[in-house]
Length: 320
Image (cartoon, rainbow, N blue to C red; front, top):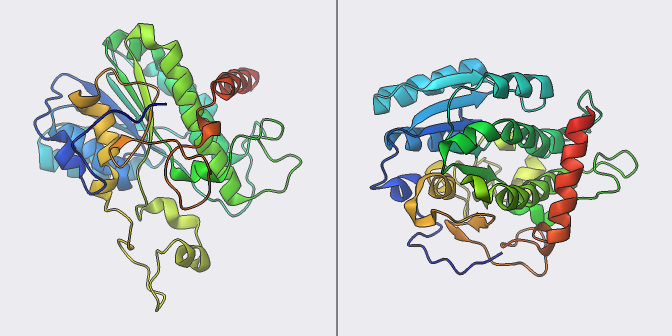
């Protein structure tokens, strides 16, 4: 994975900075989790540039409210669709119902650090099921629409939390090992990065690029499962216990969406595929993965593990 691409942006760049001068007229975009947080900023930014945007969300009412806000600001209609990434039948219905080409797919939705082990009806651990398998099924199901676009982009929101854990192929769903909320989250995000590279390799002849990214630390609904001690640990509470809107070293939602928008829309990364980005630039390899560090872990770019994760994913999705 190369970090040699030079781009004119920084960790402080915003989605508006990245989209400046970009015209997305005639391009269709789908953003999962587009009702709030950086997903909402991403959807709004793509609409500002002229894209026809659809928000896919579990909470349809929240998505409709978000669509109204975007429409009021941009003057462009915004579509809304129900999508529960933990519901494989619902994902299949969604993808089979999609009509026409899809130019931009932003797999942004996710859940983080669920305190208790929750399983889907298939017996899958819920963070792996939602963050990886749900988006994998969605992306695979939309392959015909992405291929029809001719130059589609798949953007997968991963996390630096992948530095916490690789994929434990012997016990992905915590049937034998003790459940740990952060190990489960980290594993799911490593899977996202590995799967992105598998898509990039397998779909390159279809004109489809696929990249993943760490958006940075942003205070959004993603933190809803963190208790006070965890919020204090990650620096989201100050000394007197007040939860901070933008903790020191964290990003605003506009800054957090910048890397997503870069990969979804900027001509500066046209043709770039199979990469992991952070701070609006390709990330270097992190030889010593650990919490709080940056870069991409070697186990998230290992070609053998890319193939193994892809095979395991297809097996799980096919056996449900």
